[in-house]
Amino acid sequence: MLTPGFDSEDPFTWPSRKIEKKEDMPPVAIEVTPLEEASILLKEHFKTSTKTFMLSEPMTVTVSKADGSFSKRPMIGGESFRPVNCYVGKRKKLIFVFSPAQVSDFSQMEMIETEAVKAFGLAFMALVNAANGGEIKNILSDAKKAASAAAEAKKNEGKFKQYEQLGFGSW
Image 1: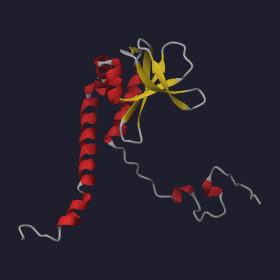
Image 2 (image 1 turned 120 degrees about the vertical axis):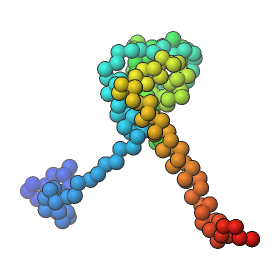
Image 3 (image 1 turned 90 degrees about the vertical axis):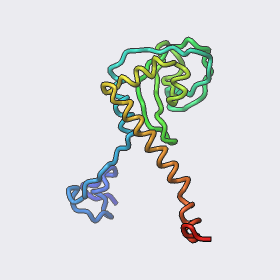
Image 4 (image 1 turned 180 degrees about the horizontal axis):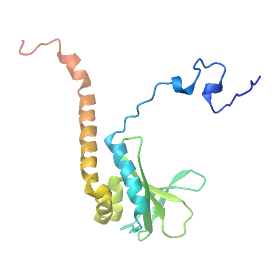
C-alpha cells in the first residue's frame, strides 16, 4: 500500500528508511583519480575541437549502434572520425569515443589510446596533448605512474607475508 508522499525514485520517502531528512546525511566525498581527471579534461577539450582524423590503415574497430549494442566492424582505411568523448574503462585505461564524419550504420566508434595512436597517428596525440594548455601530459604521466605503482604493490602484496618469518639476514 502506497503512502502519501511516497516516491519510488526517492529512497527518503520509503517507509523503511530511518533518516528523517536528506540534510541528515553526511556529505559523500568523491575521490577523483588522475585518470578520471584526465578523461574529464579531454572530454571538455573534444567539445571545442572540430578536427577530424582519417584511419591510416585497414583495421577492425569496436562500434556502438544506435540501439546501444557493441560489435566489431572491419574498416578499409580512409574513414574520417571526430573525437567526441573520453572515459575510463574497466581496465583503467582511457577509452576515446569517435563519431563518424560520414553517414554510417553505427553511431560511435571506441578505442583505447594505443589503438588511437596506431589508427590516427601522432596528429591525434597532438590534439590530446594540447588539452588544458598542455598540462594534460603531466596529468597522464601521473596517472600512469600511479597505475604502475598500484600494479607493483598488488604484485608484491603476498611477498611480505611469505618472507616475514625468515627475518632479515637470518640463516
